[in-house]
Length: 341
Image 1 (tube, helix red, strand yellow):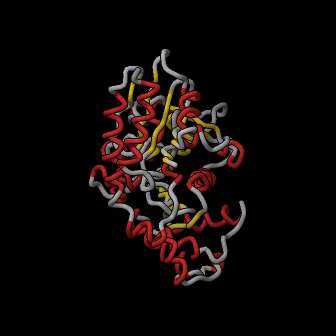
Image 2: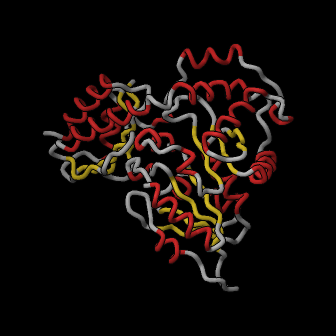
């Protein structure tokens, strides 16, 4: 199987799995799991924050951050293609009782003037704008990287207006490898930021949310309220530590493969548009004369190739550590049968 559907499809390597055999464990809820403590300390240092909390998923990181930063009836600001809006099952409204103001940006980013325009003036009739959210990299904009200056500028605008700031850093390390700018620099002006261990870094479970000690203390209360601790979570945290220590630099390989694939896909006769590829995500639209996205994904699945349909004519392909150049050749060969004739 050549699985290009998402980088969440990675499976832990044997070397990663072996770390579980010798890791120290304890009760996470009582702060007695040494391996989880080590992971949180490493993550906090990486992101330049005081503390971090280990969570099962990135979605939970986003939703806990929103809950901590807001009060019911308030409004958060996000880009309209963001994961928070499109892939978290209405979590902000269901769990935190907040509204969302969606900004129509460019390549998943927006500028300070848009933030200024989106912030509500104080009025007894309007929701209070309380949180600005950004996504680095921007998933549905082809893994686009927010420029550091723009990240800093929108955060400054939000803070000047009294808003908190949150970074969805699911693929933050892809941006780090692409630009050479540290995760600490990217997150410097954000009150909370998280990274995912289950995408390009290859761990099977987990993400870590970081912020001030007070923020993490409050996040722990929400974690407890929404399901509690994971007990001997070092079993999972050990693999996440391996991911941090071994799988960050190799993200460059995913970027290189994505660039090659995007160039070849853009040459197909029935491909209408390929979004700019900066990291490991290729998004393209096919022409009316081509099979629909659903038809194409079904046809390739029969050849044991998985890709994603995101709309009637939009396809997403994601590179990661479980696909290589050979997998790419298989993918291109099959796509050509449908898109280059």
